[in-house]
Amino acid sequence: MNAKSAINKEIFAPHDERMLGAVQVKRRTKKKIPFLATGGQGEYLTYICLSVMLY
Image (tube, helix red, strand yellow):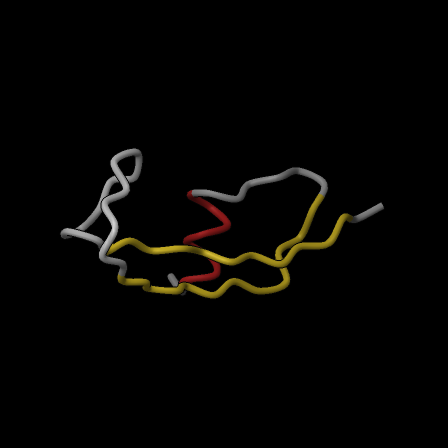
């Protein structure tokens, strides 16, 4: 399963929209972000999704 399919299935599952693309961005920061689950100190992943509504 490719990343686009995995994101669409796990995170972004609307009924009336179609995802056109998704990008996974890995960021590093020195600040602590207590409300996000991190893989290590200051490391987290962000997914940017582009979708369109179907009529």
